[in-house]
Length: 489
Image (cartoon, rainbow, N blue to C red; front, side, top):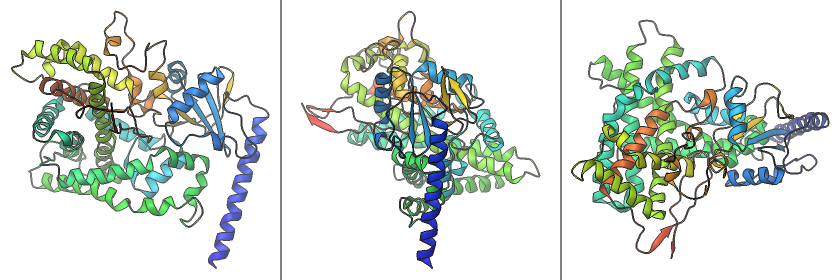
């Protein structure tokens, strides 16, 4: 019986592939797609797709083709990469009404298999996404985010104490800081130590998230989305079994703190938090959807906030080691404002232009999501004479945009001075996404990052380990992290 099922599955797969390829080749003869690598029969650009550092490969495609928009066809799936600010702004911002969907195969994997269906970042464009977006905006707009400054400063001060006691563990201390900020804001949880169970639960969830969002896996599902519906024994679908292992961790991570806030509210003992506020505002007869949003929004904060801020802070540490002259200049500015007698706080923000420039340069030099989070176009479209078919996966190459030599001369250098000229480039907002899909936690993220940078500069010299320098190496997932690999100078 099992052999028959497998045979039917293989036949169904062959039919699906044939239909997809027939449709693709039929349309190809009638439409002019953006330029890209030469396609092979049947498999298209399957062999051209990078397994790591895709942002570098896609930028090279643009340079070779002379176009800021390039196209790849992988087994019938269209992938459009935007390698310039002009193209990304035109399509993802100005035409956001048709470029704000998410590609279904990634959602199928992360949401249905691993339990990330609560995260509005990956929800398809529609009513549920709009509800969560409105709720998120109510708690994280530019004004409301300022209410979280005391919590951010508390976490930063703990970071400083931990760095003093064990500087070698700075990566763990940075993760604790970001976890403390997120958990206190989302649930009112007072993180106690690096062994805190809530931080541990968050780390396990983020491990699963890294698996779900790895560029290789997401690309596989874009190429052959029907793998999501195949049994785990089917060739290429083994990821499903691995994904299911993370489901309990995700359920516990967002379910337990939410339930504890509910209990604390009932007992009149709940500390202030986004969850407590949202539950208190439900009214007497909330719908299931209303209750779900009170769970989904804090859960999204959990996922969207911790790793992104951690990535940027790690890039800051790397830059300070590789560019000691920048560090010395920033420390002198901080000392001139605080006189070395206190720590900087948010009241010093306008008095520290060089520190502010470092924050911008951190976001530019290596963006947290170098390929953004891919959009899905909901209608056929045309850009500068090139056809973009409905359903295409559209990727903004944020890394390439941030290294445009016309806008950012000497773009490979970490150069805060580029933001202090008379006519500086625009704030690197694209680091947080585009259009209706822009990160709504960006105001809180900026302030957390600024507080960490300013206070570390005020307190420490960031130096390499003896005579070793870290190499500028980053991971290739949707969230990219610096890998502190050392080599002898």
